[in-house]
Structures are given as structure tokens and as C-alpha cells.
Image (cartoon, rainbow over all chains, first blue to last red; front, side, top):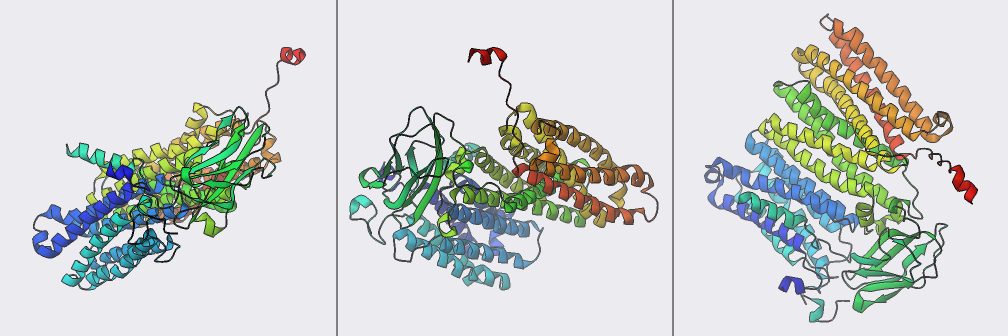
Amino acid sequence: MIVAGIEPRAEMVHWWFATAILVLGLLFLAETIVGPEVWARRPWRRYLWPATMFLIGLLLWPVMALYTNSMIHMVAHGSWAQVLMLSGGAELGVVRGKLHSRYWRLTSAGALFVSGTAFLVHEQNGWFFARAAFLHHALGWTLIVAAVFPLVQAIRPRSVAAASGFAMTFFVVAVLLYCDRDSAAILGHFSQFAGVPHR
Amino acid sequence: MKRALLVVAFVALVAPASAFAHASLQKESPSFKQRLAVSPRQVVLQFDQSVDALPKAIQVFTLKGKNIAGTPRAIPAQREIVASLPRLPKGPYTVRWQALSNDGHIVTGVYTFGVRVAAPPVTDAVGAQGPTRTEDIVRWLYFVGLALAVGGIGFRLLIVRGPLSARAQRRFFWVTGIGIVTVLETGITSFLLRGEDFLQLPFSRFLYGDLSPLASGTRFGQTFVIMELGFALVAALIFLAWLTDRNALLWVAFGLGLVFISGLSLSGHSAADAGHSWLSELADWVHLTAATLWVGGLVQLAVVVWPTSPELRATAFRRFSRLATVLVALLLAAGTYLSILRLPHVHDLWTTGYGHVLLVKLGLVALALTWGAAHHFIAVPRIERPGVTGTLARTLIGESAVAMAVLLAAAILTDSKPPPQPLPKAPVAAVSQR
């Protein structure tokens, strides 16, 4: 009922994907905390986050194809779908032993960079225009800066700092996606019924 | 239980819910493609959040391109924009709208309706120019992608059935992977190019153009949605087949590929033009499938088997030659039937643009068939002789190139309008009654 009463309508799909990204962050964090050796003791655990990433990418295709109310959103959703599938797929290939170079981790760096760029390109207003604008800028720059973590991991695979940074990126992205609402003022009212519109 | 949860999660993801940031058109009157018995008094657009009306918020164009809508005004309480209309005579009309969204973005859209006539598809809205040369190229790439992906898998499953060397297997997946990615990318590009044409907006405004009338209100759009989702699934299956070395997944990908190819037959000339029937749709699908398997198989033979697996060359060549005979027979039978259907008179071949392209295509097909026949009747019996395989490598690449050119002609044909069908003669009795 609470969700139904929110104006504008709750952005359920953002929240669903925020949850999936939160799960990814938890998996990364768990691996970082226990270390890659302990994490890999059960072979299926090594497939967990790459498979999740691949699946999120696959599930973004319906969002791309079914939400065609704006060209730029369609392209942005399509690019997220593809980079997530590519990055998850490359990691699955490494885990399975099909791919051998550690530089395949660079696909994750590329995925974060492309995703961040898509966020920035599809938001044409400045940082403080509205909450959505603020969040899109924050999401975009977070992802672009965070592309450094998998870049470092490709060169120094045992870097705990890079692994932690990579994991925390997904938490930040999840929280920002949960907050992503358009019409509200920045850090202000949640609903247009709660106060004057921001413009 | 786990399966049920997965299904629920998937349905929840795809069920209607807002994933969209800007104002979206929720309801409109007259509605998309509505056929009205009487002239409407006004156009009402209702959004999911409050919007501001811009000077040209609602324009209603007649077939001659004249805007007949009154000054638009916003009704914030109802989240509506309204424009009055004069009494509209019988005919099709195009509504072009734009609104200033709450977040400052201008959202834009187009749709059509008809007064006492059927509304045209939005791709035929006033101002739309129709397919361009760029779209022909994109469609050609789409066909090439289909051939590399679906035809390539068909070749792997039907011709080279056994295990392949690691190098050959890797190359097979590279070629197939490039094919399926091409299908997905050109599918999106072709949809956006259609959208750009009917919206007729400068690029900065096109970014926020509403493409939903194209996606939901036209066969082309509906097919795009289904095929894009279907081929994303096929891409995932190809990837999993590579990852797990399971050919069973390739069979599923192949089956789905063949099913989703039918989207083109269910949305093209064979499904929409005069004289269409289930038989024309089936013939189109057979034609497309046979071409896909033939071209894809040729490329696999030239690019995968020949350079990487000398031990398989003779077997693969003989098997493909047998399959190609069947495919070519199907291709010709279905193609002839469709040509007769689309060209009511033989002279249409040299008097219409569609006929000219068809003639070029037929010429290229004849060249490819002669090439294939030379392979079948001359090369196959001599394949074990020394030096023949080296020559064949070059001629296979040549035949593949001609086959690609056939696909280009097919792409241009698909985007062209066939000549109009002759009107049926009125019965004598009906004429005399008038």
C-alpha cells in the first residue's frame, strides 16, 4: 500500500536490479573477507558472482526491449545488459578454465566504465537539478572511478584494497539505485505531496 | 519450489512497473491507431506525472501535412495536455506531441488515428520518409549475422557432427559469436533508425523520443521486441555451449534461432502486403531459413573447416554439397512462389524499382548456383586429388562473397515496396445497379 501511494509511482524495476546488484556486492565482499583460496574450496562458489552478473545482464534485455518510452534509456539499458553479460561471461570463462589470461578481468573495468558513461550521457541536467539528476551523476562517476579497482586487480590479483573497493562499489551502486526517483528535490521531499515542487 | 521462485522473479521483472525516469504518456484520446466513426473534438494526452505544455505540445496533421490542432493547454491537476480540433473529414491523421517533463527533459512522440478509415502504422506517419540506404545496409548486416549465427550452428550440428579440434572449435564459436552479436546490435540499430524516421526530430530531441508506438503499434516493432529477446537468449545459449562443451545447448539455440527467424516472415511483405496468407508467411520463412543455412554453412566451410581441419575437409564438403542441393531447391521453390505473389505482371520485373532489384538478386543467385554446381559436379568427385583442396579454399571464399551479395540484394528488396496489386474487377451486376 505504501508503495502504491508514492507519487510518482515506485520504480520497481530499479529496485529489483538494485537488489540483484546488492547480492553481487555481498558475494564480492564475502570472497574478499574469507580470501580467494577459502572461497574456491567449494568449486560452485567460484561460479556464483560471475553467473549472477551474467544473469543480471540477460535479465536487462527485457528492460531494454519493453521500455521504449525514450531512445536514450533504451540504449543505456542495452549497453548495461551487454557489458554485464560480457564481463560475467569472461569471468565464467576464466573460472571454467576456458580463458587463461588474468587480463580478462579488464572486461569488468570496461563494464564499469561503459556503465558509468551511459549513466552520465543519459542525464542531461546538472548535478543539483533534481534528485534523479544528482543520483545519475553520482552513479556515473562512481562507476567510472571504480573501474580502477578491476584494473588494479588485473595487475595485482591479490590486492585486498582493490577487491574491497570493487565489492564496495556494488553496495554504493545498489543504494543509489534504491534512491533513484525523479521528481523529488535533492535530499529533500520524497513525494510531491510533501511539499512544493522543486522547480 | 526453486523453479517456481525463479518464474515469479522473472515475471515480476518483466511485469509492468515503472523503470522509467521521465514523464511517460499513459493514456491518449484518440488512442494509438484508433479508427473513429465520428470526428473527435479534441486530443487529450495524459501523463504519469505533471508536465508543462510547450508551444507545439500537440500538432495534428492531415495527409497533406497541414496542422489543424488548436492551441494546446496543460491541465496540471489531471496531468493532461489538451488541444481542440475542428470537425475532421474522413481520413488518416498524425499526432505529433511534446511535453516538458518534471525533470526538465522534453519527451516527444508520434502516433496515428483514422476518422472512418483505418489508421496507418506509425511508420507511415506524416513526415516519415521510409527506409533509407543506411537501413538497407543495417538489414544486410542483420541477414549476415543470422547466417553466421544460425547457419553456422546448423552447419556444426548437421554437417560436422563429431568433435572438432580445439582450434576449429574456437574458430567456430568466434564466427557464431560475431554473428549473434551482429544480430543483436543491428536489431537495435534498425529499430532506432525506424524511430528516427517517424519521429523526424533533431538528434538532441530524438534522444528523448517516445518509441513505444513503434514497439507496440507496428508489426515491425513487435517483431523487434520478440526477436531481440529471443536472440539474446540464443546468445546466452551459444555462450553456455562454449563454456560447458555441450552440443545439446547448441541444438536448443539452433531450434530457437529457427523459430525466431520467423519473426521476419511474420512482419515483412509476406505478412502485410495484399495477397498475404499463412502460405506466403511459410514460404518466406522457408526461403529465409534455407538462405541462412546455405550462406552460414558456406562461411563455416571456408573459414572454419578448411583452414583448421584438413582431415574433415572432404567429408564436410560432400555432406554440405548434399545439404546445399536440398536448400537451393527449397530456396528456388519458395522464392519463385513469392515472386509470383508480389509481382502481378511479368513486365513488373523491368518496369518497377522492386523488379529491378529482384532481377539483380536473381542474377547473383544464378551466379552463386553456377558456382555451387561447379563445386558439386566438378570439385566433389576430384576432392581427393592433390592440389584440389588449395584451389577449393579460394573458390569457397568466392562463393561465400557472392552469397553475401545475394543477402544485400535481399535486404534492399525487403525495404522496398512491391508494385501495387491490380484491383479486383467489379461484378457486372454490381456495376449495372449503380
